[in-house]
Image 1 (tube, rainbow, N blue to C red):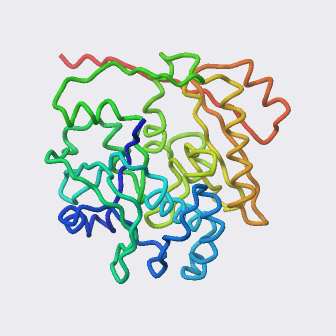
Image 2: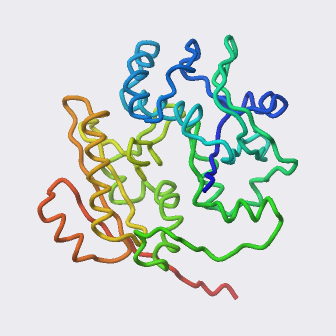
Length: 308
C-alpha cells in the first residue's frame, strides 16, 4: 500500500521550483555526509548513529530536535518507498504532486544534497481545494509529514472525482463510526491546544520548524509530543480513534518507553495521555495500575444559531 507524504523543500519552499524542474525531493540535514553506506532499514539504528553528529553540528539543539531531524532525514532517504506519493508546497498556495521513482542519491555541495528521484504529475493541487483538515496537516510545521490518512481525498483531488466514503481495514479498529469521527481530531486538537486543559500545563513540542505532531519513533508516530511549561516533563498524547482499548494502552506505553530511553534528559519525567470519545472501563482498568497515564474524553459542542 502506497503512502502519502508532505515534504517541505527548504524553509518557506525555497527550493521547490528547483526540485520540480530537477525531478527530485530532498533534505538538507547533515549535508556534509554521504549516507549511501548508512541506509539502515531500521530508523532507530540510523538515529543512534547520526543524532550525535547532528548535535555536534548543532550544539544549541535538544535531543528531541535531533531525533526528529534525523528521523525526518531517514524517512526521506530510506523510509519513503518507491511508488509512494510526495506533495510539496510551491510557496504560492499549490502543491506539486509526484511519485517517488528512485533510491537515495547524494549530491555533494547542494543545499539539499540528500535526494530521491520523483516523477511529477502534470496536475497540481491547490490548498483551496483541500478540506480544512487536510490543509492543516499539509500545512503543518516540519520537513516531513505523513498524510496517508487523507489518501482517498488526495486521489479524488488528483482524479477530479467526487469524495468517497471513509473505509478502514485496520483490524485494531473496533468502532468504524468513531474512527471516522476522530479522523481529524488530532488536527483540531493541535489547532486549539492552548484552549484545552492540557494546554494549561503543556506546550506541543516545537523548535523553530520542528513540532511534536506525528513525532516519529521506531514503533510508529506519536500523535502529539508535548513538554511541560517548566520543561521537566515530556507528555505522550495518543488518540483512541475507535481502536481496541488494549491496543491503544499498549501503544501509548511503547511510545513512552521510546521517549524515556531516547529523548528524555536525566532530569525529565515521561507521562502519557489517552483521549477517547467516551468512557471506557477497559482503559480505566488498565490505567489503574499505570499511574503515569491519564485518560480524557472529549465533547463536541454543536449548536445552531438562528440569524433570521
